[in-house]
View 1 (cartoon, helix red, strand yellow):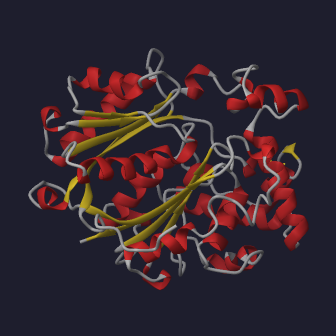
View 2 (spheres, helix red, strand yellow):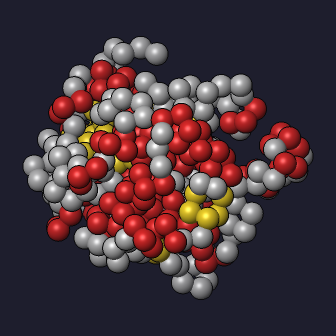
Length: 392
């Protein structure tokens, strides 16, 4: 992968954000309707009209989601994209939207995501493994009981603990810190602190994962508007620019590959490459927004970013380093563990980053924040993404 600084660095910006149904949707809500509402809010936030949008990007469990959102909002786009690569899909959409704008195919992109998984009680069997018994995963993984991401991440967590000597108390520190952040976020599902005793006494769902090692299961919808910085400067909100990114894809389903789940993860090397492409150093990053469907994700993300050596994240996060007032804030919304997790958390990472870099986060605002790293994955350790955003 080339580290050459891309021509788009600093040339495109997020100019509008919108959210709705954070935590719990109402009876009768649909993922399409919620995304359309979030999209409407994002367009208004940017000071634009639906007719200004000429590209729509959307992804959730439905065919042609970008087309559905477009019709709902009365948009007739010149460019559509419904790429689905799991939790990082909306970050991938940002990269695709920039490529489309660089090619002259569109000028203003709306990117949306929405889910009513809690309302629909749709996460009975868990992940995509159980949906199609004729798929490769359905034939060769499902019969062994691996119907959910929880099973895979339990094995990953056990591998991490065995290899590096981490203990349950280290996992507890991750989620207890997330509760410190969520207590400062009025929109968070979890508002109360979590003690070590509460963590340790919680049900063991898939050894070594206890209840609190696993993200919230909620409804939510979010949207952003992306355009060229030349146009962004004339709009109503402070633009947040895309400075660099790196992405990588591995196996369709992780167990199909004979690779090391930690050292050969798609995320390895991506933060460093994203920094190179942004022309930046790690010490210029003010915060990390890391996809945290599980506690171990935060530990691995810190190590992948180079903030500490492999296996040293438990020590790195002690003494409040990643919490409110800490030297390196992580997941300032409370993350998927404590804020919400509407199926795929990538959009929530983006929106929280934009709010932080605008200076709109109130009690949880990171002082003088100018640059943020976002890291995400998808399809159960099969996709990886790192992105750098900044404020002008």
